[in-house]
Length: 546
Image 1 (cartoon, rainbow, N blue to C red):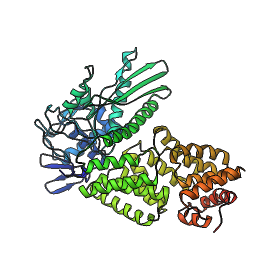
Image 2: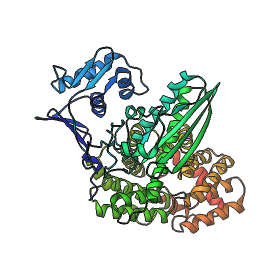
Image 3: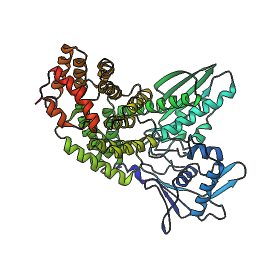
Image 4: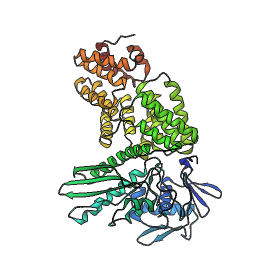
């Protein structure tokens, strides 16, 4: 069966439809205008329909990390009731001093899902911020196990002080939220996962009951000023342990530690799940199989022009099978852009145009895919539309705070617009979140460039050499190394790096003039810094002017 677009998901109730693709509420007379926070509240209530949701949980979901009064929530509830003509409070029921219940029956239309024997699975696309509850399903359900579906079991509190359970619960809930922001990830709601607390963890049984392919479990132990967190990913079909990691941290700012750990786990898990899905054999691959294989090549340990070309071919095959796939379009566009930026193939102008067209098509059906905003930002950056690019990178980070590529893209825009002091902190945050990111070399590179532009070649060399481990096939890295070594007085190494840059891309590094014309070098004051450092170093390394 052809894969349907992730943008088709909507929920109907009482004559109304919440369309998550278009981000709107529809009634019999057409679209009903509601404020963004009211929309988020309605989505969260529907996602937990039939359950009592406390005011504190709703405030935390709709206004994360923001202090608001009860009046803000009350106003949103009032707005929704007015929009839904819910004067008798049939749809949204108030439970005095406890919270609210969404009582209306909900019918959902979900991509890639068929009706199960005892209900519908309700996945949460990575486009959305909050997980949607999934009812327990029968063991005979044909949908088990679903791809990229996961439940985060309540982390066990191993601390001597049982009152520290709140910290373990916070880790569990934050991980559930962060994972639900990942594209095409079905995440079981935190409330459903809590039903497995203090129960023996039979991962195969949990997988069958919840219709998920993966289970994440872990433990938290606090002792004095230190906290240790263990997490492990398990394949619910085979009970095989796919990944495990331990985090030891000294607690200064408790919530900062929690954010750091959950962000890093979510980022790493995304890569692990992509790899796990790509490894699964498929006798008759469908579009999603090709997408996972393409993404695995996109995230290959050492990015290269050859890996990108393989990934492009796989995404192309996915589009042959499913021409409307937002995921295939987005990742094809992203791969084209990375190839253009990193390796400057001759087809760069055509690839840039095609990437832009693919992203425009994606936004027509799926405007909330974080990676799509990242790709759009990259396209705008290449076109020197700096502020528009910054807006897109900010949008990507709003949808997925752990997107290291968007942090780097934002840093690159800051560099080209002359805000050098803001560049390294963004790159270092990306490094901190994704220490195993295959693109970590690009983060090192941009920090090195800041040192280079500030005429600190020895510091720049340290960062450029760190980048070599993962992006050694990138010609520009060797160009920067050649310039930095030359400025530091090591002409022998400078010549060797320049020769390697020329070997990797003879056309790009044929002359100073050709290199200057190949891409943007920022606003005039930044261009002048490149002239005084990078290009001056390349001249010393032996690169001809024309």
